[in-house]
Length: 140
Picture 1 (cartoon, rainbow, N blue to C red):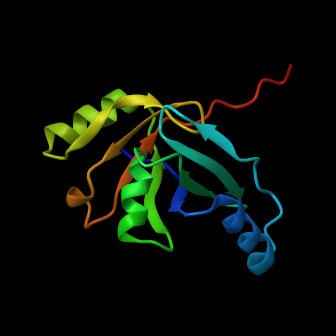
Picture 2: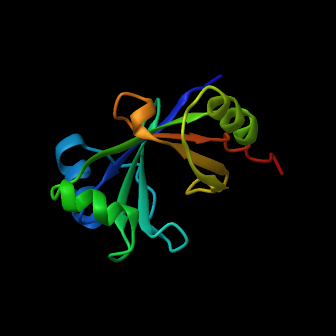
């Protein structure tokens, strides 16, 4: 049912500092510009790797779900892992039918495609994000 690993989400208290650390310590050069996602209450940037991405996530204010995570983990840490699924609605329904807790309704995520979270209590304490793959770029 799940496809490839799309990204690993890392919550950070300061996204600019985190980008600097990825550049300094890991020689990361392919990093997207920081974008605000007010609907989700976060700022994000992606560190592009050969086989996946690392999503750096900073809260946009105290109401952000990342703010609560950082209260418990002030230096930041792994927030979630994200897998691709062919159809977010079918995947959500199948997981719910098996007893998994889907958090909220599918919505547009940082990649511009539908995504949803599955509660960490159903997956050994790991928050799982499911997302539909990004369509291939048009050759035009």
